[in-house]
Image 1 (tube, rainbow, N blue to C red):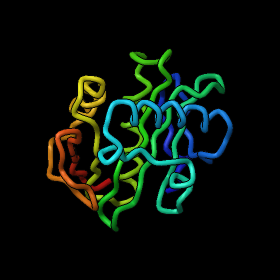
Image 2 (cartoon, rainbow, N blue to C red; image 1 turned 90 degrees about the vertical axis):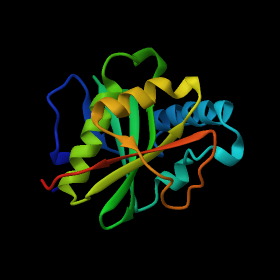
Image 3 (cartoon, rainbow, N blue to C red; image 1 turned 180 degrees about the vertical axis):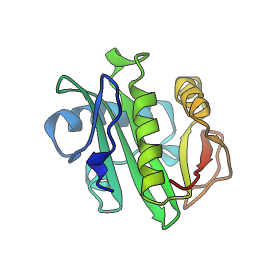
Image 4 (cartoon, one colour; image 1 turned 180 degrees about the horizontal axis):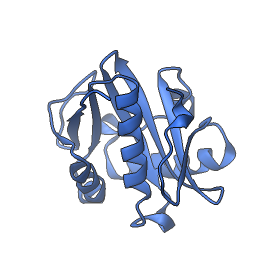
Length: 165
């Protein structure tokens, strides 16, 4: 299935885009600054633009009438397991369903690609409470550290088992 063939009936247009575009770079810079201001450097794992351009990463945007309102990425870990990365909603657009629309799109995309599990790492501090609540609402549950991650007081790990498409 082509990445852009999964369309949601929402007010946001979700598409696969190049993370190097100017408006995307600006939102990614905000995302990186947030991550690095709330988490010690050794526990902050937000990806740089160049890392998001990796062929193992599918980079998604949410736009409203062409204006960038959110971003998300999916990184292939192996044939059955992928990781949600770089989820961020523009601060002025929070509480409008941008994050939920993106995460549900990424999960549907993952299912269509044949992944059996999608996991993620996020922060444990109060600043990350809205993100953790969103992931729980979508069905993610706590899990052990995965991939190359090491457990710490600043990181929590969540996973979602997927049914076949």
